[in-house]
Image (cartoon, rainbow, N blue to C red; front, side, top):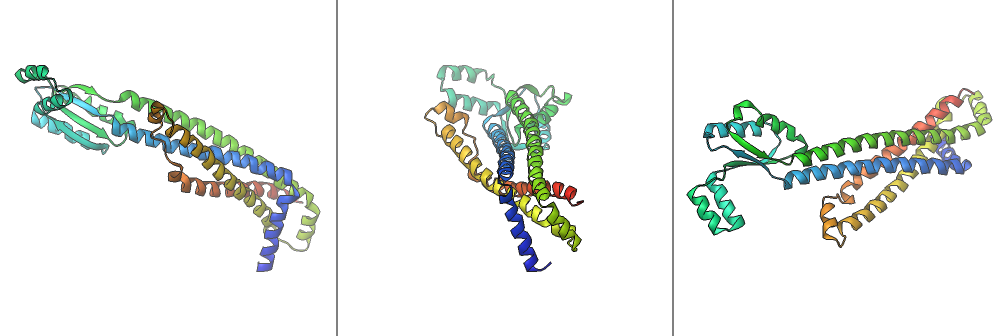
Length: 303
């Protein structure tokens, strides 16, 4: 296929956009909505990951030890915890160190005199995890019977981990269902747009085939039309996503209320996900438009 043929096919494909302008606008609108759903699902996932990371860093996991725990038993427990590869930091705190920390925190001389006579503060292990959603893996170790005489109690952000896992799971299910719905809807409308264009030019297509035009030659302009719809929709979707998210980000993270700012302190700036969103929109939009055109052309090439 020479350059003149390619230029003709590209030109015809772009002209088709204006021959069915209302259906083209409808296709762009639905595909833009579909891309917005996909984009905000990705942003939500990124924010949830950031929240999990933030909670894991901010919430301390304390394992309190019995006074009878032997050094080798404590070392064994630390070794097992480290073997999970989910440990960001692990620190062993002796009874004396716990007493010093108590004095720094509360600065209560009366309590300190009493504790110096009988130090009832337990030794402990301070643990920070890389991923708080994997807290069950740590609990399996702590519940091992060989550590029953070593561990007296555990103070862990279990509720936080459960809430985050439930929210993450629910958002994935809802997001996936919405994405599938909008993908099907956009493909249906794009297919109808291309189908209308093919039907209007059915005689021209029949003549082209009679003089020796291949199916690929006939199909190419409609493939360009579908891809163009996808590209235009991806551009609209990207700027709408940026506008909506930046507005929300500014409202929530720069609010005058300190309480609201603290709730949304972990929100991800748009520039952190802008490349992923723009690249994903372009690829997904172009593929959706192209697939929609191929579905329609395949049927009408039988004319």
